[in-house]
Length: 238
Image 1 (tube, rainbow, N blue to C red):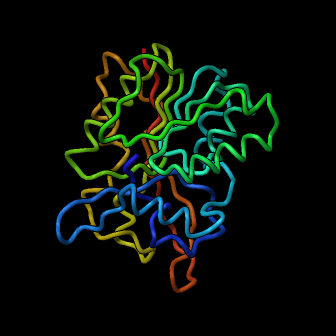
Image 2 (cartoon, rainbow, N blue to C red; image 1 turned 180 degrees about the vertical axis):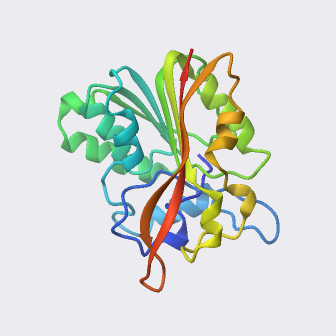
């Protein structure tokens, strides 16, 4: 899946941060390209890229949902998918890095056959693949940062994959982070506000339950504590 985020190289020093699912995909001479080759090299360069903990917003916003079928987009090494599977969800984890997916499968096997049996892993790039429509009770995408013009189509495909009564949880770095020292790539069109996602959802089909810039603390490259914000959108399909 082409995506960009706390999985981005600017955040490699933030080892204390929770696992973030994402990869960036850019185009143009002056825009960094975090494509499949970049992420495969990144995963192959070390034995673990992320912390192994689930994203905090998934824990906060999905803990009370009844288990069903879930799609974890940009699943990386599998922390979010495993968290869901341990709570009874049947999960499809999708990522563009085969090395990340192999690690996710290894981590699942370590949890035992009951958890591993609830998980399926698929290699795919969101810019070229769409999930089946209406197939999931939860679609979760954390820090899947795509260029403007691409993000809209991917968001529409992910929303279409949510079953009636299901939940879309779409989280990214808020555009305001570009005004901090946290070191986001200087590509403003790859960031958004939660309200942008909410506005893209047809109110006749969706009840937006959360659309906010949720603050948290991070550490920048100079070791300073910085308050940043995540754009968190949670919506229920009517």
